[in-house]
Length: 119
Image 1 (cartoon, rainbow, N blue to C red):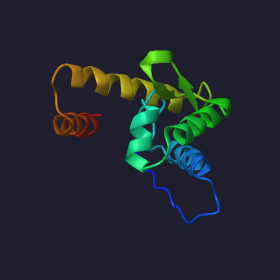
Image 2 (image 1 turned 90 degrees about the vertical axis):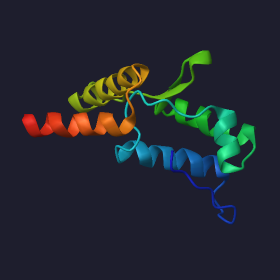
Image 3 (image 1 turned 180 degrees about the horizontal axis):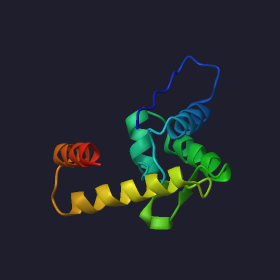
Image 4 (image 1 turned 120 degrees about the vertical axis):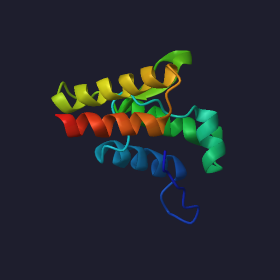
């Protein structure tokens, strides 16, 4: 996730995280079904307190942007039954399946490119 924290901002860090995740989802950079980093991993990555990251996730969950599935982690939710949301969910699942088969991201991107050219 491409999130940055501005320590000099008047906006609290948890709000910066919340806002930026919503922006990433809105721009399609975080797709439906995408797994988010754990609270601890996000806190370490952004150099913020784990409680700050946890609050951002709670706020995102309350806004129905993400859902937490216990030990399985937090994921971007489907905010509507749209075709775009279904396509995003299917794409994330397909990439995960290809990765589980040991196929690398570059090869996945190449296969997608070929498939798009053929259709």
